[in-house]
Amino acid sequence: MNRRRLVFTPVALAFAAGLAACSDQNKPAEAAAKAPAAKPSASEAYDLAKQGSGFTIGAMMAANTVYVFFDPACPHCAQLWMSAKPLLSKLKMVWMPIGLLGKSSLAQGATILAAPDPVAAMDQNEISVIERKGGITASTNLGEDVQGKVKANTELFHKLGAESVPFLVFRNAKNGTFGQHAGAVPTDQLAAMVGV
Image 1 (cartoon, rainbow, N blue to C red):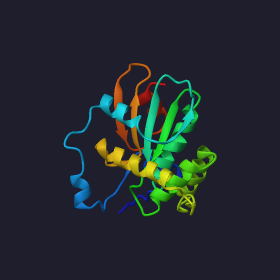
Image 2: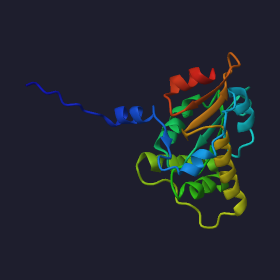
Image 3: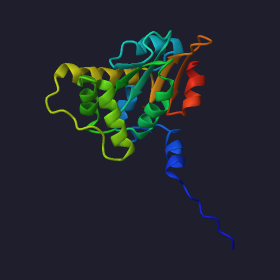
Image 4: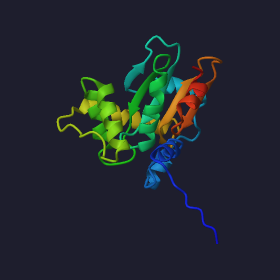
């Protein structure tokens, strides 16, 4: 019998991981009951996403903004973060932390938002997550205001009917259509999706 052995390189594993999303598999029944009766349309979702709190990266003068809901513990969010970097000269993104996956998610998200340089804090977090080191160390002196922003983002995420992260809400810069996408994607697919 001729058996073939599958060999997965780190790049192949990272790519495979980048095509998935993280969700809270242990979500209590009452949380599921809080889901909206009807998901908002893509254009309504875009308007709702503008209400979130996050930090902006990329081309500040870009015509359209891509809103990304992420959990600091999510490896797929880390993959999307890396996939987006080559597009930042022509793409504006607002990254909004939520507390979905673990006990430390809310505090880690608030730590990133409260950092003097949220982009550097996010880089530190995502590299740590990719290396399976648990993400950024949460600050012990976070104000209720910044924690409240992460809680509000989490509520907004559920209001959108989203179930997994990363969750993107966007308007295609070329054709003007609104869209939503759950999960990480490679750079070329992200570019095509958002029209850059």
